[in-house]
Image (cartoon, rainbow, N blue to C red; front, side):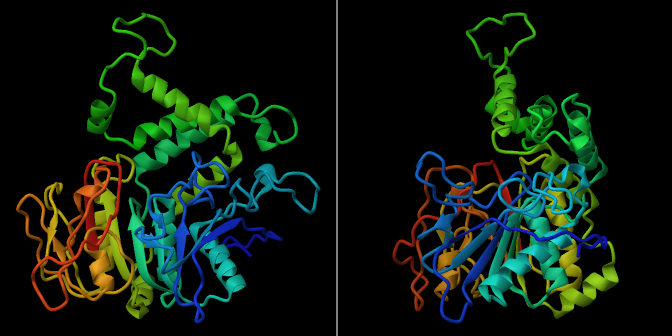
Amino acid sequence: MLESGATIGPVEVAYETYGTLNADKSNAIYVCHALTGDAHAAGHHGDPERRGWWDTMIGPGRPVDTDRFFVICSNLLGGCQGTTGPGSEDPATGRAYGLGFPLFTVRDLVSVHRGLLAHFGIGHLAGAIGGSLGGMQVLQWVIDYPDDISAAVVVCASSRLSAQNIAFSAVAREAIMRDPDFQNGDYYGTGRSPDTGLTIARMMAHITYLSEASMREKFGRRLQHGEEPRFAFDVDFQVESYLQHQGEAFLKRFDANTYLYMTRVMDYFDVFADPAAVGTMLEKSGTRFLVVSFDSDWRFDTEHSREIVRHLQSWRRSRHFSGGPPPTSGCSPGPLSRRGGLRSGCGRRSDLRGRPWVCRANGYAPRPGEWVPHASQMGSPRARCQCPPADSAQAGPDCGSMFRFPRTATRCAYI
């Protein structure tokens, strides 16, 4: 049964796992994907050029280390990559659900995740990680089930969408639903689908993923063909070519109805709407949070993450939100309190070994409890850090490559 009271079933869930579940089933990490993601988070299925969407993060020796953790990633309810969604067959009619698929919420997504965990016999997660809609799932999960998760990583998410965010989603849905081939959502099996509308929706979404400064740096006003403008209405600027490519490529892997449902799920999400109830649940939780944002993300900029941090700090012991300059140099030992849990960013492996660290960047020395990301998070090919020995303040053996993010600046907070 869904939060709305509607029922749907049976529900099939497509998922992938990486690593090995240990004997006491205590090393599981759940990766919650974003709006257009799927269960294929890492590795490849025979084609090395088509690796999972977070392959740089998940694997042996990587930040989500499959030598240590059992990692699960599933396609969301309402999805179009194997899990039951609008394109699935409705047992009552023998036809695809289409818009007859019931609306659902982030809380319903979490319920399906927990059902999959029950299938594995896993009662507690070492961690849960998600970006954007995935981060919303992680937040909802900790609040609804405060004993389920030891460590939560929330990346570029929001506790509730702003009016501007809802407006972007509304225009995207209109582009799809006004496409003549939409056919009121019953386009399955007709040989026609709302490709133009879905392409436009995706093109517009990609505009929101980059700030104006990032677009200026990435594209500027550079032309796609030659040095002189062609003075025509086809693609002439590089940014136009980029958006057109993203829109057309999207058609090969995504369903228009799923896009409608997932954007609506995000619109209605408001995880801190009842502060008293949320506070009661968070006070029961021992979950450690890492909240991460990118300054260059226009849709969910740093202020969205700060809002999450402010709410969490209302009920939890305070930690600092990193506001130092974008780091460009290495790390040195410091007074970061010892923590177990997920390795993420510079120094986290040393944390797992019980060796305290902080990062230093451009002469910026974080305050106790604060964490500043390493230069590797801003697109450098690789970064190496020095781990201090447990009994010394001097730099020790090399501890390997760390987190990598392709955008320009990162802010983090431990809660």
